[in-house]
Structures are given as C-alpha cells and as structure tokens.
Image 1: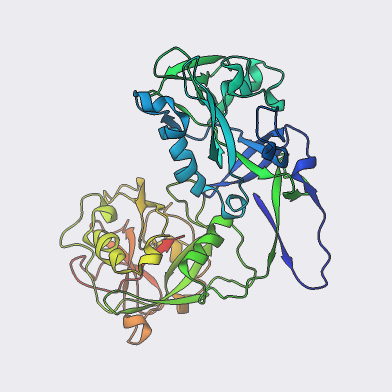
Image 2: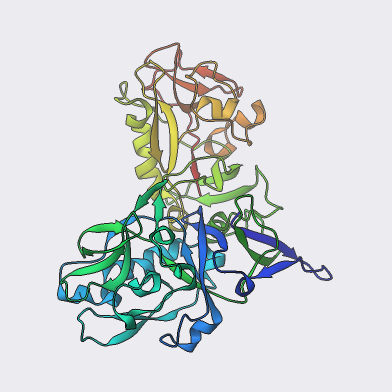
Length: 457
C-alpha cells in the first residue's frame, strides 16, 4: 500500500517507523499518482553541491522509478528555451502535482531549482518548483557544469543506472537542460541510458522528481516488493459517510484510507437540480475499474428508484446498451442535474457489457453514470451473457433489489439493468418488483420502467 495510516487516540503508543532522511539512496518509496501506486527512487539526500541553495539540506529527492507519460518539452520558440516557461514545467507543477495523493502532496517542498536558459553564455537562474525533471548534470557528466551536480544515485554514471521503463520497455525521457548551442533542443536520456538531445516539440517520456522533508516518516517494514510506504498518523474520522462532503469523500478515495466506521450500505441523500431527492448508498469498495487505471475506491448507487419511468430506447439501439437512449440520458441530462461538487469528483468507470448483437461478445465501455448488470445485482446471470462484472457487496438479498419509485415513497416496480438478454434477442434484462431478475419478454424496450443508477469515486 502507498500510505500507512495509524489512528491516533489519547494514551495510544506511537507505532515504530523509519525516517526518510535516514534511508539509503536507492530506497524505493511507494505512493499514488492519479490513484495508482508508483514506486519512487530516493536519488539524493540533501543538496548535491554548493551550487544548490542551502534549503536542499533539509529534503530528500524522490524520482519516479518508471516513466509516467509521454509529452513534448515545449514549442519551437525562443521562449521555450527557458525551462521555467516550458510546457513540461507548467504541466509538472499543475496537472501532475495535483494528481499526487493528498497526504504526499501536502508535504511536497517547493525548491529553487537551478537551470540554464540555453546558450553557452547564459547565466544560471532558479525557479521554485514542487515537481521537476532532472538536469543532464544531475544524471551524467554531459552538459553545462553549472546546470546541476551529479545526484548520488546516478554517481556510477553508467547507461544502465539511467535506463527507465514504461510497461516493461525502455523509453527515452526528458531532462530539463536545454541543448546548449543546438537550437530548440533539450537533453534526454535514451532508452539505452545514453544522453542525447531532442527538439522541444518532439515527444519523450517524463520522470517527475519531488522533494519531501527528511523528517518524513515511512513504514518500519517494507512492502512485498521491497518498497516503503509513507507513514501517516491520522485522527479517527468523526464524520459518517452521509455527513461528509463530496470533496471529503473524494479525498478519502484518493488516499485509499477508507474509515473503519464506513460500511457498504451507508447512505447519503442528494437533491437534483429538478428538486428530486435521491438516497444514495455505498455499493462496494475497490470494485470497479476506472479509465485512469486501477480501481475506484467507492461505487455508489441509488437505494430506490427515480420518480419517472423511462424507456430503454424507442428501437433496438446500435451497440446495445452503450447506444441506448437511456444511457445517453443518464450521462447527459441526469449527470448535469447532480450537485456540482458531486459531478466534479465522479470517475469514469470501465464497464463490461455485451454488445447487443446477441453473440456474447463483451465490450469495455466508458461510463460516468451507469446501470448495473444482472450479475452485479444478482450474483449470477440466468438471463444475461457471462462476464458483465461481479456482484456488488450491497445486493445481499431480494430486499435490497426491491425498489420503490420516487425514492421509495411509492410502490416497488420493475427496473432496468444494462444487460442485453441472451435468451430473447432485442430485449434487456430487468429486476422485478419482487427483487428477482428477468429478461424483458413482457416489457418492450420502448416502454417505461424504473431506473436505478450508479457511479464511481
């Protein structure tokens, strides 16, 4: 895991931990970027030389082990020769920085990074950054001597120590040093670990580096892969799921630290812009895959049904559920009626659904708001095709599947599932008013029945 959380309570003894500043160079520290675990290599303790400000004496340098993504350094323009103004620097300290899990992001240090603007006669200057890419002199002996000093991890100065992978394959990754008298270029490390240059507007991979205080606590024991986790002592949560704001729920989702007092079935009520009240509840933890990779911490869905009956589609939709009128409505009109703070934290789910050709071929489809499949609510698939997910922990019995209209204030009725029927072509499955599954042999897709939707955070 990326963060080790220990509840604080009066009189409790503090668990043992290590101090980051005491760890040897080469130690790996694990934490999340965009809700996915990444290992980071401790490449330097303190400042590498007097070229750097004394503030570096108090920090540990953590470089992402594998390449993160691919992007260009900047434009082919004179202004791009200034690292502080480059596209990659801007991205690093905005988009990327905001993807770092909150517990780590909150302690990232803004450091005066030295860089040279490009020509052999240009002066060295600094720019304050919380995330940066390394210079050519920090990983090798190539480039301007005043553009940085060799970091301890790279002191062997071999190609092998500089090789970085993406999905198991060696990749070329950017450095922040501009290419001297070679116009409009910056240095990079090639896939074999050698040093080269590339034009600003070409794409190479990125390896962001951040700076944490040497006093940062890390776990006393390594993870199974040998990495260590950030150690955080946090007070036990005092708010229930229902009392927490969507921002607070999202922060918990990003940290992966689910309060022990929160459970499947916990409820939270929202009001749509149409003034319709909806009771939501937790369907499951770490259940659904999301577009950005990994699992969503929470899958949350309706306890009851909406007030209005809705048809699946006027005619059989091309592409099955993904092409249906109901799916389009959920991800446009319905989503836009949700509270703005909830809309902002919804993660796009990757849902498996039979493609509507009655051949059992499944497709992975991206959905912000979705209907559950038959197996996700029933635990098996008597009427639908195999493979459309796994059962949510919330749906334990017919009682949890029996749902009344108008947020439970009216009688229970049939409600739609996203699963096309395998026995009856051009039909979708549904849950009956008794909480039992069925395919829509008696419900034409153009007729309205109940709607109960879900989403991920």
